[in-house]
Length: 425
Image 1 (cartoon, rainbow, N blue to C red):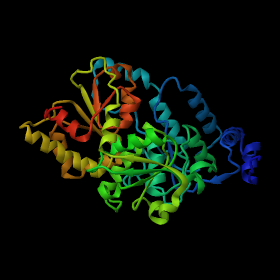
Image 2 (image 1 turned 135 degrees about the horizontal axis):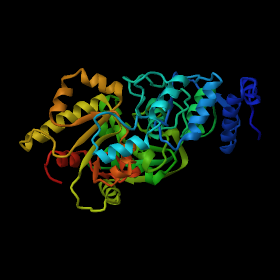
Image 3 (image 1 turned 120 degrees about the horizontal axis):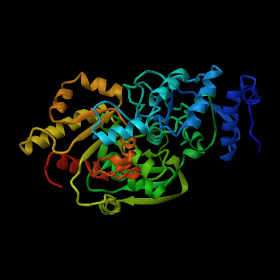
Image 4 (image 1 turned 180 degrees about the vertical axis):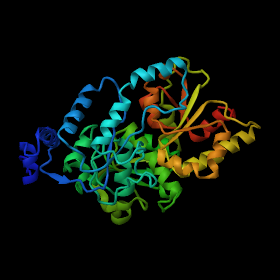
């Protein structure tokens, strides 16, 4: 069946509002038809989010496209936030790495100038965790979004009850520009039904990053309904639970392609609809201690020397919450105290959204964390690791997303703490 376009959409496609917008609309129509969407629906969130945050020199077609839009006076129908910047003053790097970064991201400044003209919501709105209260881009339940950042999409869908497909980069800003997205998949009631039931039967609270990894690798792009997790993290969406779900969801999205999960008794749609969200033919996946251990042992170490001493540690991919920043401060202080040390043994970078960092700086924890030798930044660790001179280093992380996309080696929170405070492996 052919797509049904409204009068406004047809006018955009025909060029009534300019050639640049017509190209945007044509691209969205082709995208819609690829996924069998029969119509487009209005984007209803207050803000958009753009995944493409880095000014790589090779992205000339993107810059040319933005220039064409700006030249015709096009601005986004939604102000938008953007994924983290690739660089920031204070990032640990040797002279050769810094030189490579300068060449690699040579177009960062002019790219950001284009984003401002197009509709960047504010100067410091660069984070993969745009849904943090401090950032201000928090969709409401039922909002239709045009996002692409995988960890943000799965959080918005699952924890906030918004509706968004896992779009690709640039498609996200196109939807925000015209204010419409194709209706299919996770935008539909049927597409939000669970095709998997995940039964968590562990003896203790599972590591969020490993649990998410196990779920993502099993269900891939399908929707899981998770039972037994609330027993470990509670039935309230408080700071600890939100941080846990953020990290678990990011792992489901990066180790698989999950765009939505439901947690029995906890996430909004699971609380409202319960087992009605589960399709009749849903498959079952049981996760116990042994299964988590199996998944964890499956992670390869791709360092040149598997026994090398780590040269750098990243904590915060996706960006940390304010709750996590304070928690890590206390854990690192405690770990150092136990080892009778004053500063971390491995250069350690903790990342969070600029607005979250601003809030953190107003607490006594900020100075306490600084005294441990930890560096606080708002960069994208993945973009840092994409520098081939950095990718060759033995880097450790507590992020399954960073492990998946780079050469960084994954360790649990407890293991990371031991490594950076010299408490043992």
